[in-house]
Image (tube, rainbow, N blue to C red; front, side, top):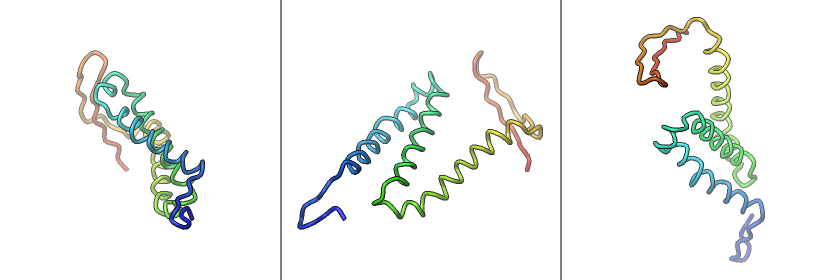
Length: 118
């Protein structure tokens, strides 16, 4: 309970949560989605976006005043983690994938459409 007698009490934990959330939404997410940054640093932008989403998810689960997020966010975070592991281990190790279409954009980039049957 942060409010007593019309006064708001802010702890170090509240300041940290506010700062980290502000940094995530004003720096990390916009930078990871910026067109020029993604064009020049695609892999870094993807990892930055994943790190920002993970930090925000951890922050939601860490803070005690958002206990409702434990029940709302946890299944989605778990589904995301499971999907990432499936993507890393199953899709890369599976021989079932078939290349449906391949476009050579330039010397460094290829757009590849794959079909991975169930």
